[in-house]
Image (cartoon, rainbow, N blue to C red; front, side, top):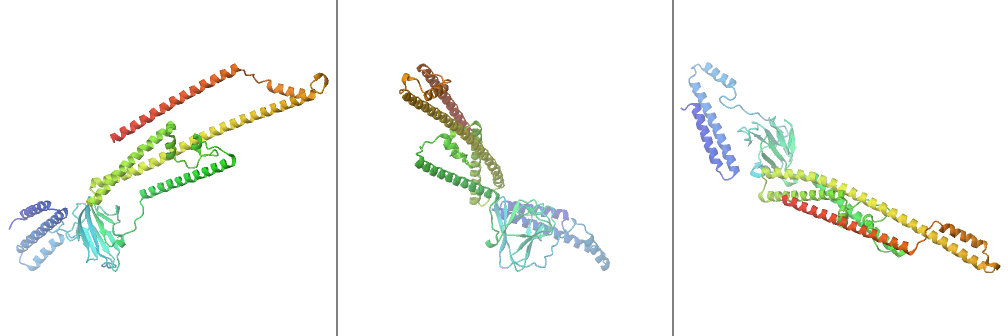
Length: 485
């Protein structure tokens, strides 16, 4: 008979050979099952060798039966774990409500890096144990797993399923949440289980009606909120435009108003005040060349965020399409998908803040234009009022002079009457501070005004050229950034 050391070496060699054969198998599931069988065979050979060694020691013991029984009992009770037969794993006592499920076929799908390795049916038993022990119903080979790691427990006469962590060192996880030890936690169809630090995931399968109702995720709720806000802004713009059109038609019919519209009318809508909600996209489409420096910078930042969001969404769609076609994702693809979703959340929040800031900036600009237009209108109205008042005074003075002269013709000597004197004095007082205009002064003023108009037109053309150059530079920068990305 070979010594135990040589027998263990032979068992290890056979286990290594079996593992090599399993590594060349076709599928990962077959390879894992072959490795599991090799490990079990090595453990059985080790136990058989230990039993043979114990039998040899018994044959060399004294013939006294009492002493022989005592010598056999004491080593069996005091043999330390790790020497001889392996120690027995922890035990599990099912609760009183344990039993077979009521008319439901459950199972487990074993996944690793998004790839389905195998499917394990859960039938014919009230509970299933997980662990590294060979007696476990579902063997866990990862070093972080305990001998008796966890138990999946059914409730008799119902379709309820529970998961119990048996005090494992590295824990049992249900949907990424670590379970409290020695507590039956309810699980549902579709939940994901993970044991220790293993990368394998176990998904509970069963009747579709037992799956929980899925609600909207945080990202979907946020997108829905943004869509609702955009729809509300669109409806408000339509109502405002309809009200402005009706008011314009009514004013035109009542007072013969013209249909001329200025830039300030397009920006503000009316002179009573700015709109409560400003659509910055429509404003940029209409007045893209008249934006301020701050508005241009904000618009540039918004365009960059939108471009990044579009690229990340396209990448996420490609990864999701691969998941559907290939039946799963690799670990790198899954981590990339999670990282992209987090980046999308951050970019969407930044985009929302930038859009709000640009809207406020445009609202302030519209308010400034409204205030300037109102001041100009008030100044024009006051000027017209003063002109009408002067014309009225002139007409009154002329009428008074004409009446006095007609009255004076009936008087001998042609002396002016008292009314003529009063009218002439009033007219002299009014016209005294005014400067008499001649053809030369009027021609000079006309020349000055023409020069001023030419100067303003040249300044406007230069400013417009500068703005066009800035826009071209921005477009070139955006194209360069897109090419670099």
